[in-house]
Image (cartoon, rainbow, N blue to C red):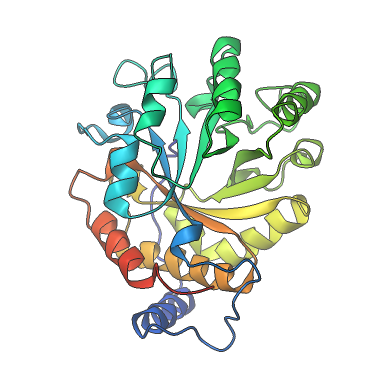
Length: 304
């Protein structure tokens, strides 16, 4: 899950808003306008890490990473994880090899686990889907499945990796487990103007991602578009830690902007979570990663 783009400057207004939010978190108090959402708990309870097999990002970053999904969650200090299978091009550098059950042992201390049935680059296979659905049924902390790189970006023809009927069948199979299991999907801001309502009506959680750091200046407007496009689905904000176009950590100004807007929306109840991508970028020395880890330490225990 990577989208290479070049950066452009963020607006001064956005940066000032991020700075104000950061000051609020450092004080340990929420601004009056940031009323707690009804869900309760802490900020940390709503934080997730997007993960894939160790080193599978090597084709995109060109640097070796050895951090596993479980290690990424432990390092970042978040209790929830999304585990995503590698694309075919990434698989030679790292992939999750069936059977998947042994991988779940290290994930038992986590609160919520979501596992992909459509992975990076849209990879999917019936055999792996069957295994993931069985894990979802039998593993206590499994709470859903992920459709990563599910939409193709086309307005006509093959708009997604599955048909609407195939997606509906996955919903029926999840319901048959007897557990409440959510369907998550990756929605890039570049997809917001596509005809996807028939798919999104069958999605429980839309995760919104901005691949181009310059587009973060439009994050407020893009969340509003996502709310209009998928009014029934809950929303989560996806936060890149790396600028894949430059193969380096995202600028701290952009990282702060994502985090502070996400925190505000959490407190307002507009989103129910934030997701940080990902483990394969966290042991490469990027300043954005360490800043985010410290930010989570400072705001994680804030009550919602």
